[in-house]
Length: 347
Image (cartoon, rainbow, N blue to C red; front, side):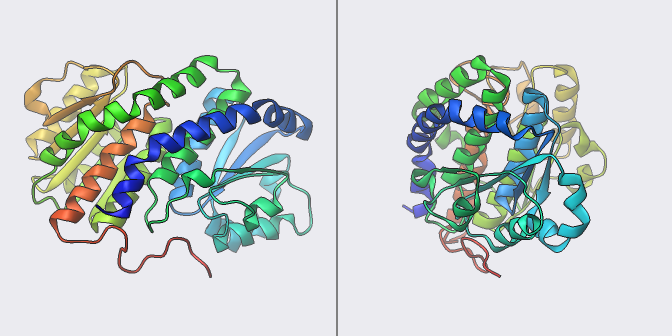
Protein backbone atom coordinates (compact mmCIF):
# COMPACT_ATOMS: atom_id res chain seq x y z
CA UNK A 1 0.00 0.00 0.00
CA UNK A 2 1.45 3.36 -1.02
CA UNK A 3 1.69 6.33 1.32
CA UNK A 4 -0.43 8.32 -1.14
CA UNK A 5 -3.21 5.72 -0.95
CA UNK A 6 -3.15 5.75 2.86
CA UNK A 7 -3.45 9.53 2.88
CA UNK A 8 -6.37 9.39 0.44
CA UNK A 9 -8.15 6.89 2.67
CA UNK A 10 -7.48 8.96 5.80
CA UNK A 11 -8.85 12.22 4.42
CA UNK A 12 -12.24 12.03 6.12
CA UNK A 13 -10.69 11.53 9.56
CA UNK A 14 -8.68 14.68 8.94
CA UNK A 15 -11.77 16.47 7.62
CA UNK A 16 -13.58 15.95 10.91
CA UNK A 17 -10.70 17.60 12.75
CA UNK A 18 -10.68 20.47 10.25
CA UNK A 19 -14.43 20.91 10.61
CA UNK A 20 -14.25 21.03 14.40
CA UNK A 21 -11.27 23.40 14.33
CA UNK A 22 -12.91 25.84 11.92
CA UNK A 23 -16.17 25.87 13.86
CA UNK A 24 -14.21 26.77 16.99
CA UNK A 25 -12.60 29.66 15.07
CA UNK A 26 -15.86 30.91 13.50
CA UNK A 27 -16.58 33.86 15.80
CA UNK A 28 -12.95 34.97 15.88
CA UNK A 29 -12.69 34.76 12.10
CA UNK A 30 -15.84 36.76 11.36
CA UNK A 31 -14.80 39.42 13.87
CA UNK A 32 -11.37 39.63 12.23
CA UNK A 33 -12.85 40.14 8.76
CA UNK A 34 -15.33 42.74 9.98
CA UNK A 35 -12.52 44.68 11.67
CA UNK A 36 -10.55 45.00 8.43
CA UNK A 37 -13.14 47.09 6.54
CA UNK A 38 -12.22 45.19 3.37
CA UNK A 39 -13.86 45.61 -0.02
CA UNK A 40 -12.62 42.38 -1.64
CA UNK A 41 -10.80 39.10 -1.06
CA UNK A 42 -7.80 37.80 -3.00
CA UNK A 43 -6.68 34.18 -2.82
CA UNK A 44 -3.05 33.38 -3.58
CA UNK A 45 -1.69 29.91 -4.27
CA UNK A 46 0.65 27.81 -6.39
CA UNK A 47 -0.11 24.52 -8.10
CA UNK A 48 -2.81 22.66 -6.19
CA UNK A 49 -3.37 25.60 -3.86
CA UNK A 50 -3.99 27.83 -6.88
CA UNK A 51 -6.71 25.44 -8.09
CA UNK A 52 -8.21 25.62 -4.61
CA UNK A 53 -7.92 29.40 -4.72
CA UNK A 54 -9.97 29.45 -7.90
CA UNK A 55 -12.70 27.44 -6.20
CA UNK A 56 -12.54 29.56 -3.06
CA UNK A 57 -12.77 32.86 -4.92
CA UNK A 58 -15.90 31.56 -6.66
CA UNK A 59 -17.38 30.57 -3.27
CA UNK A 60 -16.71 33.99 -1.75
CA UNK A 61 -18.28 35.78 -4.73
CA UNK A 62 -21.31 33.52 -4.84
CA UNK A 63 -21.96 32.95 -1.15
CA UNK A 64 -20.38 35.76 0.85
CA UNK A 65 -21.26 38.51 -1.62
CA UNK A 66 -17.68 39.79 -1.72
CA UNK A 67 -15.71 40.58 -4.87
CA UNK A 68 -13.04 37.89 -4.93
CA UNK A 69 -10.29 36.76 -7.27
CA UNK A 70 -7.40 34.33 -7.30
CA UNK A 71 -3.80 34.95 -8.29
CA UNK A 72 -1.09 32.44 -9.09
CA UNK A 73 1.69 33.07 -6.60
CA UNK A 74 4.44 32.93 -9.22
CA UNK A 75 2.62 35.49 -11.35
CA UNK A 76 2.15 37.73 -8.33
CA UNK A 77 5.79 37.36 -7.28
CA UNK A 78 7.05 38.39 -10.71
CA UNK A 79 4.59 41.27 -11.10
CA UNK A 80 3.91 42.50 -7.57
CA UNK A 81 4.34 46.16 -8.51
CA UNK A 82 1.94 45.86 -11.42
CA UNK A 83 -0.77 44.12 -9.37
CA UNK A 84 -0.43 46.09 -6.12
CA UNK A 85 -3.07 48.75 -7.05
CA UNK A 86 -5.81 46.18 -7.55
CA UNK A 87 -5.18 44.73 -4.08
CA UNK A 88 -6.08 47.93 -2.25
CA UNK A 89 -8.80 47.18 0.28
CA UNK A 90 -8.40 43.44 -0.20
CA UNK A 91 -7.99 40.67 2.34
CA UNK A 92 -5.43 38.13 1.12
CA UNK A 93 -6.08 34.46 1.92
CA UNK A 94 -3.26 32.02 1.21
CA UNK A 95 -4.01 28.28 1.52
CA UNK A 96 -0.87 26.11 1.56
CA UNK A 97 0.24 22.61 2.50
CA UNK A 98 3.75 23.56 3.65
CA UNK A 99 3.38 27.25 4.36
CA UNK A 100 6.87 27.50 2.84
CA UNK A 101 6.41 27.55 -0.94
CA UNK A 102 8.86 30.15 -2.20
CA UNK A 103 6.60 31.91 -4.68
CA UNK A 104 3.85 32.37 -2.10
CA UNK A 105 6.13 33.53 0.71
CA UNK A 106 8.08 35.92 -1.52
CA UNK A 107 5.01 37.32 -3.28
CA UNK A 108 3.40 38.20 0.04
CA UNK A 109 6.66 39.65 1.36
CA UNK A 110 6.89 41.94 -1.65
CA UNK A 111 3.30 43.10 -1.24
CA UNK A 112 3.74 43.80 2.45
CA UNK A 113 7.04 45.64 1.99
CA UNK A 114 5.50 49.10 1.55
CA UNK A 115 1.83 48.79 2.53
CA UNK A 116 -0.29 46.89 5.01
CA UNK A 117 -2.54 44.28 3.43
CA UNK A 118 -4.41 42.06 5.90
CA UNK A 119 -3.34 38.41 5.52
CA UNK A 120 -5.06 35.19 6.52
CA UNK A 121 -3.14 31.97 5.95
CA UNK A 122 -4.18 28.31 6.08
CA UNK A 123 -1.19 26.00 6.47
CA UNK A 124 -0.96 22.27 7.13
CA UNK A 125 2.04 22.65 9.42
CA UNK A 126 2.55 24.71 12.56
CA UNK A 127 4.78 27.79 12.77
CA UNK A 128 5.41 27.98 9.04
CA UNK A 129 6.83 31.11 7.40
CA UNK A 130 3.33 31.89 6.13
CA UNK A 131 1.78 31.52 9.57
CA UNK A 132 4.40 33.79 11.10
CA UNK A 133 3.66 36.51 8.55
CA UNK A 134 -0.13 36.33 8.94
CA UNK A 135 -2.55 38.54 10.80
CA UNK A 136 -4.84 35.53 11.21
CA UNK A 137 -3.09 32.15 10.84
CA UNK A 138 -5.05 28.92 10.64
CA UNK A 139 -3.11 25.65 11.00
CA UNK A 140 -4.26 22.13 10.05
CA UNK A 141 -1.28 19.84 10.77
CA UNK A 142 -3.48 16.71 10.74
CA UNK A 143 -4.16 17.38 7.05
CA UNK A 144 -0.50 17.41 5.99
CA UNK A 145 0.41 15.00 3.17
CA UNK A 146 3.84 13.43 3.53
CA UNK A 147 3.68 12.08 -0.01
CA UNK A 148 4.85 14.41 -2.78
CA UNK A 149 1.39 14.60 -4.37
CA UNK A 150 -1.38 16.27 -2.42
CA UNK A 151 -4.62 14.39 -1.76
CA UNK A 152 -5.79 14.62 1.87
CA UNK A 153 -4.37 18.15 2.06
CA UNK A 154 -6.35 19.28 -0.98
CA UNK A 155 -9.66 18.05 0.40
CA UNK A 156 -9.07 19.70 3.76
CA UNK A 157 -7.99 23.04 2.32
CA UNK A 158 -11.04 23.03 0.03
CA UNK A 159 -13.28 22.36 3.01
CA UNK A 160 -11.59 25.09 5.06
CA UNK A 161 -12.01 27.68 2.31
CA UNK A 162 -15.65 26.72 1.82
CA UNK A 163 -16.42 26.92 5.53
CA UNK A 164 -14.91 30.42 5.71
CA UNK A 165 -17.23 31.53 2.91
CA UNK A 166 -20.18 29.90 4.69
CA UNK A 167 -19.32 31.65 7.95
CA UNK A 168 -19.35 35.07 6.30
CA UNK A 169 -22.57 34.25 4.48
CA UNK A 170 -24.26 32.77 7.55
CA UNK A 171 -25.00 29.71 5.40
CA UNK A 172 -26.02 27.22 8.07
CA UNK A 173 -27.30 24.70 5.51
CA UNK A 174 -23.89 24.43 3.89
CA UNK A 175 -22.20 24.02 7.28
CA UNK A 176 -24.59 21.21 8.21
CA UNK A 177 -24.11 19.55 4.82
CA UNK A 178 -20.34 19.66 5.28
CA UNK A 179 -20.71 17.60 8.45
CA UNK A 180 -23.04 15.22 6.62
CA UNK A 181 -20.51 14.71 3.83
CA UNK A 182 -17.86 13.89 6.42
CA UNK A 183 -20.20 11.41 8.12
CA UNK A 184 -20.85 9.75 4.75
CA UNK A 185 -17.19 9.66 3.79
CA UNK A 186 -15.96 6.26 4.96
CA UNK A 187 -19.04 4.45 3.63
CA UNK A 188 -18.87 6.36 0.35
CA UNK A 189 -15.21 5.50 -0.26
CA UNK A 190 -15.81 1.82 0.48
CA UNK A 191 -18.85 1.71 -1.80
CA UNK A 192 -17.36 3.36 -4.90
CA UNK A 193 -13.64 2.54 -4.93
CA UNK A 194 -13.82 -0.85 -6.63
CA UNK A 195 -16.16 0.49 -9.32
CA UNK A 196 -13.79 3.36 -10.10
CA UNK A 197 -10.88 0.94 -10.38
CA UNK A 198 -12.86 -1.42 -12.61
CA UNK A 199 -14.15 1.21 -15.03
CA UNK A 200 -10.79 2.97 -15.31
CA UNK A 201 -8.95 -0.31 -15.94
CA UNK A 202 -8.17 0.20 -19.62
CA UNK A 203 -5.34 1.69 -21.62
CA UNK A 204 -6.32 5.36 -21.39
CA UNK A 205 -3.72 7.97 -22.23
CA UNK A 206 -5.56 11.18 -21.41
CA UNK A 207 -8.27 12.32 -19.02
CA UNK A 208 -10.84 15.10 -19.22
CA UNK A 209 -12.53 16.42 -16.09
CA UNK A 210 -15.72 18.43 -16.37
CA UNK A 211 -17.36 20.56 -13.69
CA UNK A 212 -18.95 23.95 -13.16
CA UNK A 213 -19.01 26.54 -10.39
CA UNK A 214 -16.97 25.87 -7.27
CA UNK A 215 -16.26 22.33 -8.44
CA UNK A 216 -14.36 23.57 -11.49
CA UNK A 217 -11.33 24.44 -9.36
CA UNK A 218 -11.44 20.93 -7.91
CA UNK A 219 -11.68 19.47 -11.40
CA UNK A 220 -8.47 21.34 -12.24
CA UNK A 221 -6.89 19.86 -9.11
CA UNK A 222 -8.11 16.41 -10.17
CA UNK A 223 -6.30 16.93 -13.45
CA UNK A 224 -3.12 17.78 -11.53
CA UNK A 225 -3.49 14.59 -9.45
CA UNK A 226 -3.87 12.48 -12.59
CA UNK A 227 -0.86 14.16 -14.16
CA UNK A 228 1.40 13.89 -11.11
CA UNK A 229 0.42 10.48 -9.76
CA UNK A 230 -0.21 8.59 -13.00
CA UNK A 231 1.95 10.62 -15.44
CA UNK A 232 -1.13 11.02 -17.63
CA UNK A 233 -2.16 14.04 -19.68
CA UNK A 234 -5.25 15.49 -18.01
CA UNK A 235 -7.23 18.70 -18.43
CA UNK A 236 -10.26 20.29 -16.80
CA UNK A 237 -13.03 22.28 -18.46
CA UNK A 238 -16.45 23.62 -17.67
CA UNK A 239 -19.11 21.09 -18.65
CA UNK A 240 -20.40 22.57 -21.90
CA UNK A 241 -17.11 24.30 -22.71
CA UNK A 242 -15.57 20.99 -23.73
CA UNK A 243 -17.49 21.35 -27.00
CA UNK A 244 -15.53 24.50 -27.83
CA UNK A 245 -12.31 22.92 -29.07
CA UNK A 246 -11.22 20.30 -26.49
CA UNK A 247 -13.70 17.76 -27.87
CA UNK A 248 -11.19 16.97 -30.62
CA UNK A 249 -8.91 15.35 -27.99
CA UNK A 250 -11.65 13.02 -26.74
CA UNK A 251 -11.60 9.47 -28.09
CA UNK A 252 -11.39 5.78 -27.14
CA UNK A 253 -8.22 6.46 -25.14
CA UNK A 254 -9.93 9.09 -22.96
CA UNK A 255 -11.29 8.81 -19.43
CA UNK A 256 -13.93 11.47 -18.75
CA UNK A 257 -14.98 12.32 -15.19
CA UNK A 258 -17.97 14.67 -15.10
CA UNK A 259 -19.60 16.35 -12.11
CA UNK A 260 -23.22 16.88 -13.14
CA UNK A 261 -25.35 19.75 -11.91
CA UNK A 262 -29.00 19.88 -10.91
CA UNK A 263 -30.19 22.03 -13.81
CA UNK A 264 -29.97 21.74 -17.56
CA UNK A 265 -30.16 17.95 -17.44
CA UNK A 266 -31.10 17.65 -21.10
CA UNK A 267 -28.06 19.64 -22.20
CA UNK A 268 -25.82 17.51 -19.99
CA UNK A 269 -27.41 14.33 -21.32
CA UNK A 270 -26.78 15.43 -24.89
CA UNK A 271 -23.17 16.31 -24.06
CA UNK A 272 -22.55 12.86 -22.57
CA UNK A 273 -24.15 11.26 -25.62
CA UNK A 274 -21.78 13.14 -27.92
CA UNK A 275 -18.74 12.29 -25.80
CA UNK A 276 -19.74 8.63 -25.73
CA UNK A 277 -20.13 8.59 -29.51
CA UNK A 278 -16.44 9.51 -29.69
CA UNK A 279 -15.61 6.32 -27.78
CA UNK A 280 -14.62 7.76 -24.38
CA UNK A 281 -15.15 5.99 -21.07
CA UNK A 282 -17.35 8.18 -18.85
CA UNK A 283 -17.75 8.39 -15.06
CA UNK A 284 -20.47 10.77 -13.86
CA UNK A 285 -20.89 12.14 -10.36
CA UNK A 286 -23.88 13.73 -8.59
CA UNK A 287 -25.71 13.47 -5.29
CA UNK A 288 -28.59 11.55 -6.89
CA UNK A 289 -29.38 9.51 -9.98
CA UNK A 290 -29.76 11.96 -12.86
CA UNK A 291 -31.66 9.75 -15.30
CA UNK A 292 -28.87 9.61 -17.87
CA UNK A 293 -29.38 6.65 -20.24
CA UNK A 294 -26.98 3.84 -19.39
CA UNK A 295 -25.66 3.68 -22.94
CA UNK A 296 -24.17 7.17 -22.47
CA UNK A 297 -22.11 6.42 -19.36
CA UNK A 298 -19.93 3.63 -17.97
CA UNK A 299 -20.30 4.42 -14.26
CA UNK A 300 -22.72 6.63 -12.37
CA UNK A 301 -21.46 7.59 -8.90
CA UNK A 302 -23.76 9.19 -6.36
CA UNK A 303 -23.29 10.27 -2.78
CA UNK A 304 -25.12 8.59 0.08
CA UNK A 305 -27.67 11.41 0.18
CA UNK A 306 -28.42 14.97 -1.00
CA UNK A 307 -25.64 17.52 -0.49
CA UNK A 308 -25.10 21.20 -1.20
CA UNK A 309 -23.52 21.54 -4.65
CA UNK A 310 -20.25 22.95 -3.28
CA UNK A 311 -19.99 20.30 -0.56
CA UNK A 312 -20.21 17.63 -3.27
CA UNK A 313 -16.68 18.64 -4.22
CA UNK A 314 -15.36 16.60 -1.29
CA UNK A 315 -16.57 13.20 -2.58
CA UNK A 316 -16.02 14.30 -6.20
CA UNK A 317 -12.23 14.68 -5.87
CA UNK A 318 -11.95 11.11 -4.56
CA UNK A 319 -12.80 9.79 -8.04
CA UNK A 320 -9.75 11.40 -9.65
CA UNK A 321 -7.51 10.35 -6.77
CA UNK A 322 -8.45 6.67 -7.07
CA UNK A 323 -8.35 6.68 -10.88
CA UNK A 324 -4.87 8.20 -10.71
CA UNK A 325 -3.64 5.64 -8.19
CA UNK A 326 -5.13 2.73 -10.13
CA UNK A 327 -3.47 3.89 -13.35
CA UNK A 328 -0.13 4.34 -11.59
CA UNK A 329 -0.35 0.83 -10.14
CA UNK A 330 -1.25 -0.60 -13.54
CA UNK A 331 1.87 0.97 -15.10
CA UNK A 332 4.24 0.22 -12.23
CA UNK A 333 4.61 3.89 -11.25
CA UNK A 334 5.45 4.74 -7.65
CA UNK A 335 2.81 7.37 -6.76
CA UNK A 336 4.80 8.51 -3.72
CA UNK A 337 7.84 9.65 -5.73
CA UNK A 338 6.82 11.09 -9.10
CA UNK A 339 9.82 11.82 -11.29
CA UNK A 340 10.83 15.47 -11.37
CA UNK A 341 8.59 16.65 -8.53
CA UNK A 342 9.17 17.78 -4.97
CA UNK A 343 6.60 18.20 -2.21
CA UNK A 344 6.88 22.00 -2.38
CA UNK A 345 8.95 24.33 -4.45
CA UNK A 346 11.93 26.16 -2.95
CA UNK A 347 13.49 28.65 -5.36
